[in-house]
Length: 390
Ligand code: GDP
Image 1 (cartoon, protein in one colour):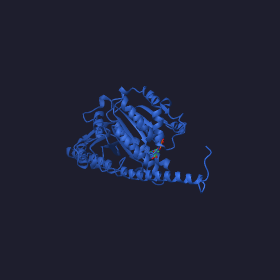
Image 2 (cartoon, helix red, strand yellow):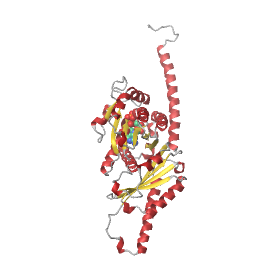
Image 3 (cartoon, helix red, strand yellow):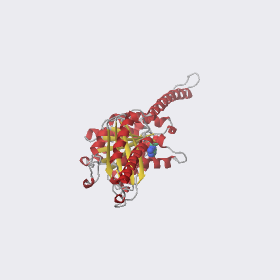
Image 4 (cartoon, protein in one colour):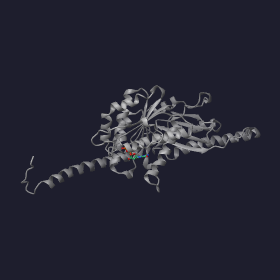
């Protein structure tokens, strides 16, 4: 697939940056256009793979943002984007949308810029273009507290209502002990970029290499068109360097045994992808559609294995809508299986964030009410004998 990618806010921009890094390192060509948008000048300088002229600072003249960010206030993030929608629209003018199949907007949902401004950007993109707009959202960890949960629960509603499909990444599930938060984010962003790029870059191999089993961009888009929230699973294994003419030295029976080992390897890889950490933990059976992509040397992808892996996933997801195909990468020294579970409706972490958000909203409202009373009582004398001057 060919993508235009837009990172909004700090986390969104960092993930887009890692996607470009991963695709360059692996010889893929997914992100045809990249753009980052932020309210904080310092964060806007962080990406290493986004051209200078593809970075847009918004809110510079806003009385609260002033180029220093929105302090985690999603309402200001949204307001700034709405006020400067003409500048945002103008920067899209340079994007040759007819060259891309879809647009991906990434953001961290717990902060102010990504959670507030990204839905405004998405709304505008949906008005401007016919191409699908996908969302990629990082859900805040429980440890971050109530305010990020509240931002995320509200922003999630806007995202899912406005995008054609929303891929979720749960920071809580991916947090590992013994690391600083920043180190943790670095690892998470790499893991996420690997999954997204392996999934969406399929269907873009040189015409001459495309076999009948190759996955097509339209298959990926078909799996995503159901909307809702999606999760991605991934597993990879190293592959031996090819030894020409090796098979000719074995008997037919031995070759057949090797083929069934290869088939078992493929099926095992897909099981591992689904049973290990998903981008957002979910009940696999709640997926509406699913898709498997095998990225690696075609000689390693056993057809029998692909068939049995697909059958297995059909049973797991309890849906007949499971597509499987290859992303042939002849020179790759790994074979990866990436599984997209599209429109999963049972994701406990989202429920948890909503509960945390409701509690936070109640607490904030109570505190505001109490604070007003306290200020009133502080500035009023005991018998209320005094009047303000003006
Ligand atoms: P914004 O710039 O105002 O949108 O705020 P940030 O993007 O800095 O942070 C928003 C949320 O994203 C935080 O609450 C974290 O949950 C998450 N976050 C921040 N940085 C990263 C990152 O590098 N990776 C991931 N996965 N999540 C991040």
